[in-house]
Image 1: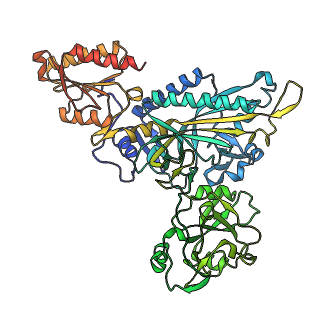
Image 2 (image 1 turned 90 degrees about the horizontal axis):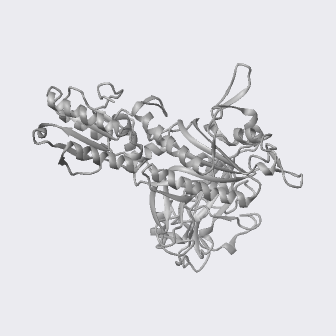
Image 3 (image 1 turned 45 degrees about the horizontal axis):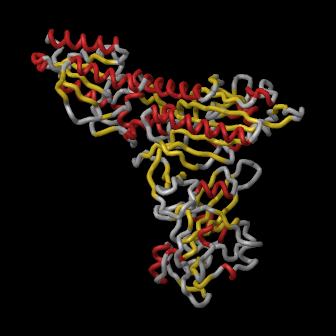
Length: 584
C-alpha cells in the first residue's frame, strides 16, 4: 500500500471526549471515527487489525473442534420471553417493533438464538457434544458508553456455544476452550490472566474472565490474585479469609450515646477512640426486580466499618435486577431517620430486608446507629437483637469488597491487586436456556433431557483496543506484530531524490514479494511528519531511505525499541522477513 493512497488521516490533537489512551490513540491515528455516542466506524487500518484478530480466533477455534456459523443480528422477543430474559436483561436490551407490530431486539448476545438453532437438529445423544461459534456485530444500550472501543454500544464479538449430555462433557469442553483462549490471546500479543468472575446477565454456575492486566483508567475491574498459589478473581467475585484481628469495641455496657452530627465512620472512630472495624456500618439500598409486578424493596446492608459493599455481590444475594443507594427521602420513608445514624434497630415491621456481611460475624461490643438522629448505640452484640429488630435469625452473605493485603482464601498468603481489561469470558450455563426453551435431546434409553450448555465469548474490538491500552508510548501505538495493520513502513526522506525513491521502491517490492505487509510512504511531506505518523500509527518496523544510501546503508528501527540501526537494505529486509515468518 502506498501512503498517498491509504485512507487515513492522523490528527494533531487527541479528541476532547476521550479518557482511555486506546480511545485517544485510535482516533488520533486514524483507526476509528465516531458516528454517535458509543458507535464508531472502523476505518481501513482498524479493519485490518480486526480481520487479523478474527483470523487468529477462527484458526484456534477450528483447531479446538468448533464449527463456525452466522446467526441473525435482529432477534424476536418470543425467544427471549421463552428463556425468561426479556425483562431480566434490563435497559441494555434495545427493544423495538417491526411493521407488523412484532416485538424484536438488537442482539446483545445469542444464547436464545443458538438454542433454537440446535433444537430439533441435534436430537440424539449420538450427535453430541457439539461446539458452534460465530463472529457477529452486537449492540448493548449502555447507559454511559466510554473508553472508545472498550465500552461501546455497538461492537464485534465472537460467541461460541457448546451442547452436552453430561457435566463431565461440559467440564472437558470448558477446559478445552480455556486452553484455546490462552492460545488466541497469546497469538494476539497479549498476556492474560484467567480469573473467577460473576456470571451477570448471561447466567450459569461457573464463569471465568480473561483479563489483560493494565493499570490504567480503562481497567474496568480490580483483579485480586495470589502469587503463591495462583488464585485470581474479579472484584465482584473475589473472596478472602478474614484477617485475625480484634473487632471487640471494648465497651462494657449497652447504652445509647448522643453523637451530634457525628455521621461518618471516620468521625465515629475519632469520637469513640476505637478502630473502624469495631463499628457496624449501615447502608440502605433500593432493589428492583425482573418481575414488574414485584415492587422495589429496601435492603439494609450491615457491614464492618472498615469494609466496603461490593454491589454486584449484593445484587446477586438479593436476586435483584438493579440496585441503587437510597436517597435521603427514602431513608426517612423506610427507616424514619436520617443518613449517618441508620441501623436495623426496630425495623422488623418496616418491610426492610436486613443483610449482614460475613465480616460482621466476629464483632463484639461494637458501635451501631440508633436509628434516631444524632444518636448511636455502644456495646452492642448480636445477642442483643430482638424480634422488634429482625424477624428470625440474622441473614449473612459475602457482600464485601476484598482489599489488597487480605488473605488468600486458598492458601492464606496476601492478595495483590491490579486493574484488568476483560477481553474474553467463559461460562458453564447448564440448562439455564435449554430447560425453559424446551430444547431437548434423547438419551440411549429413549428419554428426553435438556441440553447441558457452555458459552464462550471474545470481544474482537475489545481485544484490539486492549492491545493499544497495554502497548503504547508518548509517541503512539506499539502494535504486537501479529495484529498490526501493516508490518513495516518504508520512508524515503526526499521523494524528489530519484536515487532514494528507486531504492525505497525496490525495498518495498521485495518486502511484498516476501509476504510482508508493507507501506511505502511516498507522500511529499517532510521526513519529520512521516516519522511522527509512523510512530503514531504503530508500524512495527520502519526502514528509512535517506542520505546514508551513498554508504550503501538505510536506517532501521523496530517500533518497540529505542535503538536506530544503520544497516544494508538486504539486512533490513531479512530482519523483517524473519520476524514476520516467525508469527506465521
